[in-house]
Length: 342
Image (cartoon, rainbow, N blue to C red; front, side, top):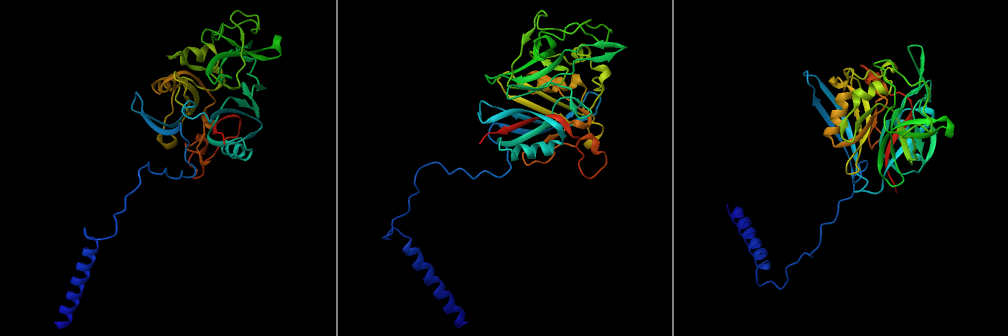
């Protein structure tokens, strides 16, 4: 008992002494914290830069099915270092390889990469303009009902001013296959089987030379001046016989722009991947309008539809993956990379 008493007495004395040192009679002034903002935390590696967001969506469709996908939204006004890059691949590469190679080429940090236009047998079938140079042109002819058809198809580009534009494009032979913009898909309509008897030229009414800095072709036009034009343009751009199955739900890739200059990139899964049915073209256009798009075009879809995130991994589940444990990507001929300059 004596030992316990002595121990508690000593403890009480120590506490009392400590308290008296902290009292008002202490000669040590209290520390005053300087005014000023809290220091900004160090950025985490492999995060999206300011002005760029990537969000996942899961939309309930009209018949109770679902569509799952990802949307990247880039705001160049909020972050002038963000860049829209159209990438041409003379030798096809997977989106993850395109992403990694872009990083190694010292062109800035790749943040989001998707597939872009159509291709066949390793070659691009769609317009691709990079740094103001036309790297590939839109497919000039297709065959329908034994006839040679000259499709005028949608393209999306960024001008030297930084503005995003969509147009119906044909690369005219009377001006060196340079891209000319037209006010409509002109006089083709696959639904009625009526087609232009000759390709458009630089002298066709409404033709205007188009000179974007970066551009990707695809089609059909999905949104024009805020209006859903997907179904009508599907027929007028002569896509029904081309395998993109616009009226059925499929994996899709699309690019668009909002009225205030934001860039939208969307990839949705389909064919049962992650339980997703995909979108029809009309549903895809409605989704983009809900996201604020006033201009948008469809890009290559199906097994090509892939979105790579900032850390270089695939975000969605491309349909070629099937039941495999490892993601399966298709090598593509053109791509879009959203990057941030150094």
